[in-house]
Image (cartoon, rainbow, N blue to C red; front, side):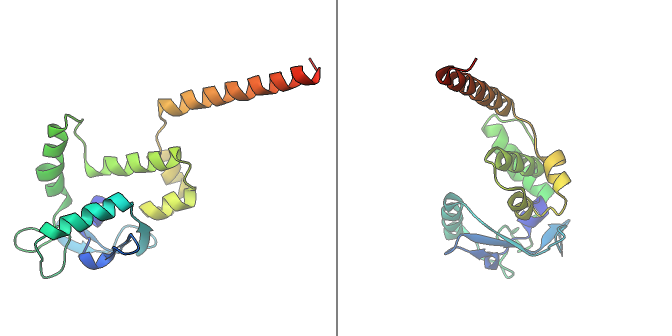
Length: 171
């Protein structure tokens, strides 16, 4: 999700039984608005681990009038800049990780989906992209492990073909 979409989540956007979240609004500088997506109402599955974490979070959650998942003390939705400054940066510092913003998680998530060979249409739907070029060329990053894996696979394929030819008597 985009940072504003994360800040715009309400409890009613979740189906905990089926492990789904519906993304249909964003918060930008305190104002609720539609998402940037061409299809502004998208729904996708959550990992069982995230569903469990959210259920545990809701046990400590302070209800607010609009049901914002992440709200300030006066019941307004968090602003993504506040999330980065007050929550994410201290967490990254405590874990001794490189500082970054929420948007870095979108790039990492899309790259991971590529490595897991998730179909492009699924990747695009989950992140709200309508242009495959944006997903492939701007958000998917090359990982050196992919290059190593490819070299091993190519080597294995060539060796397997050579062994097959030798067994059949061809040179």
